[in-house]
Image 1 (tube, rainbow, N blue to C red):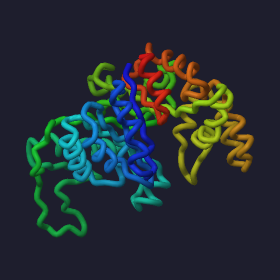
Image 2: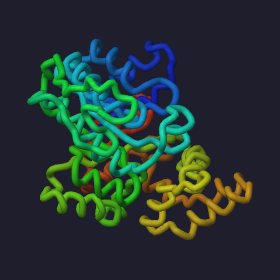
Image 3: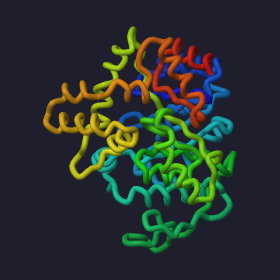
Length: 340
């Protein structure tokens, strides 16, 4: 098992993130991953890091599918791969309805079809074998529909890629999305993953792999874990409770909370429903208190450094390829890397 670092870059001066990235590279951490929601994008910071690092892999976790056309994402991926000397890994995800529709102004519709077509077009463009044509429902290329000029033609990128295949990882949660990941992706950027519940959580992934005639060796499982270092495990849990209460319990109008579904998959249906009920009724404090200790201990890393390292060791016998820590504590990163 390898170790990764998720930056969670928030737009601060680059001098504030360079030390942890350089330390990660120095001690042998496998990869660093950028994140985007509706603030800093996931791409720009990696372009900078490509110039100031030499070995560490650079990945997006994730670039939002509705924010860019497939061709734009392929162009970005090829460019970052060239700038980094072949170290780029393309992480893609659908984001959530309120960001897609409220920030990007795009409909959050047909998510599985959208992901499948998007990945197909991105891969065709990067492969650079022929002009890109795609007879798709959502991403037809060339476009000849309403409003078109009538002069569309298929295009082949004028950039020769450094690699004709750049690894595509999907940030997926929920059985159908995870199954699709098993069908078409090189990696799964997993949320709320725990080795104790690995069989249940990977069942959809394995179904997707089997449907495509693939094996578990054909995909890398890369969970992203929240870290809350504290003097005691309980203090660490308390730092994480508000976040997980929101993840598990929040439900938007007409929306489905897939984190709630995953908690149920892991056997936490009763507590998850309690958290949801409290949030729905406006009792946020009760919702936060109802998040189970065992859930936090399994899907996150709360507590003092020795407890965190002990917990990381419990992941070594799992199917995880890279354990990605969302944290910037150099001492913690060094201890985790040393333990692996």
